[in-house]
Amino acid sequence: ECAITLGYTINYSTMLNYSSAFNSYLLFCKSHGFPTESTANTLSLYLVYMAPSLAVSTLTMYLSGIVKLLTLYYPNATQAHNSDLVWNTLCGCHYHHFSKPNCKPPLPLTMLAFICHLVYLSADYDQLLCLAILVTGFYGLLCLGELIIPDDPKLLDYRKYPPRHSVILLTNNVFQFTLPTHKVDQTFDGDIIIIQHLFSHGPDPSLIFRHYLRSRDESFPFHCLLWLRSNSHPPTHAFLLSFLHWFAGPSYSGHSLHSGGATALAEHGISPLSIQQIG
Image (cartoon, rainbow, N blue to C red; front, side, top):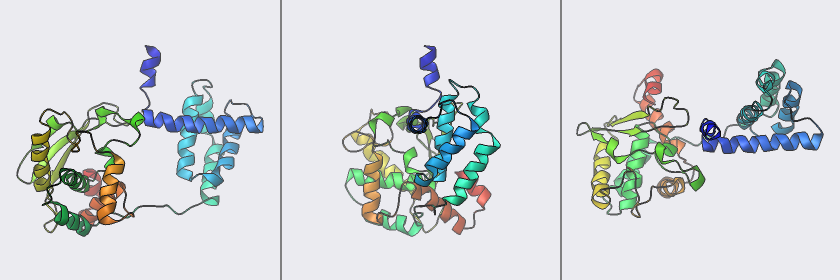
């Protein structure tokens, strides 16, 4: 029971990444004849060895995963991780192997309005679902991964996805729902997401959401999840991206909703601090 309880301290998707990093570290030690016990020198050499093939952000995540798992066997691993040698090696890798970030562009408000104009009057249930998720993510400054399930069934965790009973229609232009939890939510309080119509020349998210909600409740009145496809399954990441790419092109990703909503708020004179507080 203790082992099972300790297993819940790290999210499963995070553990997969940590395991991949740990395996690469073990392979590095074995191929170079180093002991697996982490020292500042061993971690520094590992970073230099892996830097040409990994982005610095990935390298930092790998290092955290390695130390997390090594600490179970070698308590001094954290001390080695925090050493000046490892920190300076990371800084050196950042400058020596610098690569330009590959960021997806934000989804423009005009593009969202164009998609709404094409899809809103459609009788297709799945298209209405995708449109409701897009406007909710855009106005709520949410990423796609917070609203849909992953493509890999191993990463599926129904505790993370919005339930239907959490929806509250506050006014004609405002509604809210709950994101129950996420991997950094230590108190399991969840987040209350409030969506309202913020842009006079943009689509009304409440109108689109209510339209979807009526269709959803007529088709699946007893299902517990909020977002459902016509086959009664939750939408996957690939399903939503295929819809977005069909109308907006392949240059956009799930993060384009969050960055697009933040950009639209900035263009309308909202301060950076207020945008950060919103999402």
